[in-house]
Amino acid sequence: MTIVEASGAHPAPAVPPAPTASGRLGPADAAILETFVVPRYLSLFGELLLEMLTESEDAQVVHLSCRTGYPDRGIALKLPGAHIVGIDASAAATELARAKAATMPDMVSDYRLMTDLPTDLPGSAFSHALTLYPVGDAEYRRRLLGELARLLAPAGQGLIALPMRGSFQELGDLLREYALKFDDHAVVLAVDRAVASRPTVESLGGELESAGFDFVDVDLRPTTFAFRSGRDFFEDPIARLLVLPDLRAGLGLEEPERALAYVREAIDRYWSDGAFELTLNVGCATGRRAG
Image 1: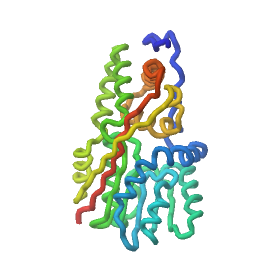
Image 2: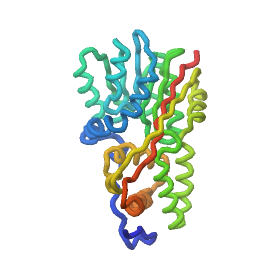
Image 3: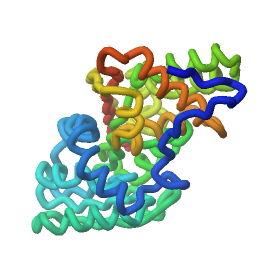
Image 4: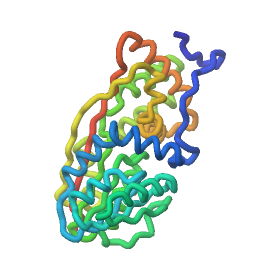
């Protein structure tokens, strides 16, 4: 297979862009995420989070970056009578979350469109505050954890589930190969920064403590995902809607697409006789807001 040339003489294969220019889900992508990504991928994070969710009477739950409202119905089943408030920047996603909630008559929920942190929700008002698979760098995660802590009543439970250090390491290795081949030092620095920003069990626990949480616990479950080819990976809704936007955010590069196009070609070249397996370390952390 032809390798991408640094001169640009050979055009790189197209790499699917982020869902929208702002990264927010449009109507089609919200439906695709709910139909294909939630059961195959987000459920790995949601099921772990539900296991760590503590039961409570008269629960008031806030879910930041709720997308289409997963795993809110699972929360409603575990916390009967809970009032769930979901917050997301996508109007299409929150509309779908409302439609899903309407099919569960006993579920009390309120989905709101908000784009910035901190939210305009009142502080110290919730028994549980959570977020599932936040897409952003370490600074965004710090702000998100701070908002979870602000929203919780004293001793309330905060939870965050996300890919941990070592996830997608195969992509990082191929990006480093690109940087070495084309002497692109910016990509080397970006990959190192992205790897370092993905938390370990110890560092995520420290982040929760710094945000004001006590009794912190972190669970980690390694797994892998298999794809038939580079095209199969880059066009899969899992990659297009979550893995690649998360990778782009972590890299922080203005023009990452040429490097990503090289990754797509390299996958086809190196894994031409077998499946491309991508490492995923599913993590979830929980803590109690300090009184």
